[in-house]
Image 1 (tube, rainbow, N blue to C red):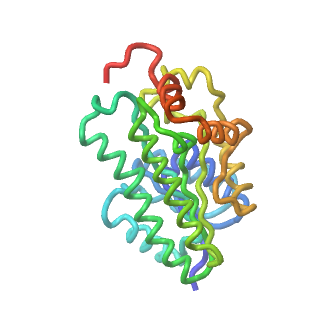
Image 2 (tube, rainbow, N blue to C red; image 1 turned 90 degrees about the vertical axis):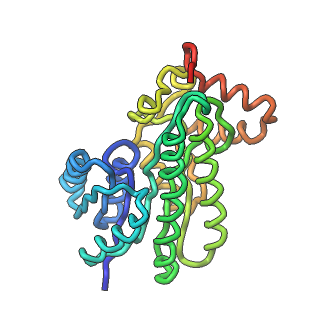
Length: 266
C-alpha cells in the first residue's frame, strides 16, 4: 500500500519552495521536489528536511518532456508513494513586446506554463479520482484576470491556468478530489528580474508579498476548500476591479503598469 506524498514543481526557490515547506510542515507527508537544476534543488530539499523533519525526494527534471509525468510516477512508486497533492508551480514569465520575442522563447513559455501543467494535472487527477482523495493546486497569477500588454503571452497563459482549474474543480465536485488555483499579485522573488520586468511601473507602485505569505495563504485557502485563492489584502480587491472595469479602459492601464520605465524596444 503506497503512502501519500506532496509533489511540487518549480520547488527549488521562491513560491514553490515556500509552499513545499508549509505543506510539508502541516501534513507531515514526504515531499517530491522538482526543478530543472539539481544543485539548488538538492539544497532546497535539505532545507525542508532540516526544518520540518520530513522525507524529501529531489528530482531534477524538465517537466516539458513528453515522459515527465511517467518519470514522476515511477519515482514515487519506487519510494512506495503516490501523489496526494500536486502543486503545479513551475512557470516562466516574459516581459517586453510580443513581436520582439522569438518563436522558441514563446514556445517555451507555452510548453511550461500551459502544456506541462495541463498534462501533469490530467495524469495525476486520474489516480486521485480512483482513490477518491487528494487534490491539485495550480499556481496562477493576478494577471490571469486581464490581458497584459508587454507581458501578453504570460498573462494569457495564467488566464488559461485559472480557466482550466475552475472548470475542473466543477467537474470533480463531490469526487473527494479538490482543485484550486492560487492567484498572487507581485511576489518578492527573482521571477520579475528574470523576465526583465523590474523596471516596469507595477514593480514600483504595487506592494509585493513574500513567498512565505503566499504559501501560508495557500494552505489556509486549501484547508477551507476555496477554488480560487487570492493571497493578501489587495489581491481580492484588485481582481474585482480588473473584472468590472471595461476592457477599453482596463487594458491600457495594465499596459501602462507593465511597460518598462524606460523605452521598450522589444
